[in-house]
Length: 253
Ligand code: NAD
Image (cartoon, rainbow, N blue to C red; front, side, top):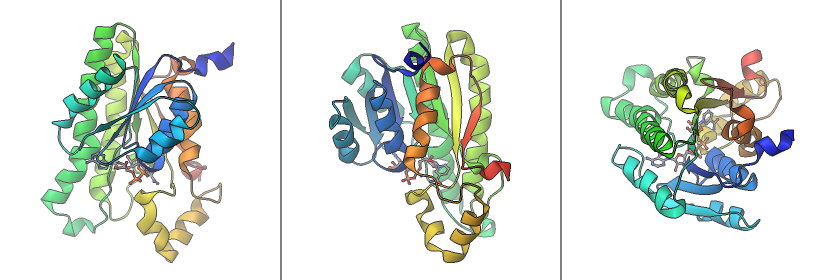
């Protein structure tokens, strides 16, 4: 039956940046769909664990700073130690630095690119190797952005990294589809999380953005839940290399 294809029972899902925001929302959804969830955070994912355990779901936390590739082994071995296999990777952790392009420093540029792009690639590579070893396919879900499609204002390093994510999603799908690995992305629109706190506190920018969203509201972590479960499940087995916008219609305008 069709709804059974969305079930994730027996699957192990790793979500980076699962302590808050969109990562927390997606971790909870994957657990509700039946997956055992490994939440990766720089700091404690206690709140996410509480939410998941409240409905009898399974959650393990792995502490790791995803600003360098040194974290890659920690994440994969932490997940394997906890549950013995991995099936789903959600590359959600990311940062944004707002600054006029003429003032961006090399250090700030590298920080954003390393977390949002470089570590995403090497974590995906490590998971793909493990999926190939397990011989049972696997899912990788990247988190892109409206700035995978558009230029944005005062966020050049973020735009560069999120545009790269959309390209990487296609490149990796091409290479790994033959192993039954699906690499897709979700491009959130303007969502009410820490990432947009600065924008939302600026009345002019906030009004400007809201008036351009056909849905007439900021998105929420819950808005990500249907898309992530779909892309993590058998229901999307023939979807590969695609970026799904969850944006209240922003791109359609
Ligand atoms: P957020 O700032 O609340 O969450 C970011 C997450 O990344 C946090 O869990 C944080 O701990 C984690 N993280 C950052 N640096 C890390 C590091 N060095 N090591 C480990 N974890 C680290 O914001 P969010 O909106 O929930 O962002 C989640 C993702 O969604 C990000 O990739 C962001 O770029 C993307 N996104 C957000 C929006 C939006 O409007 N909120 C829009 C498009 C894309």
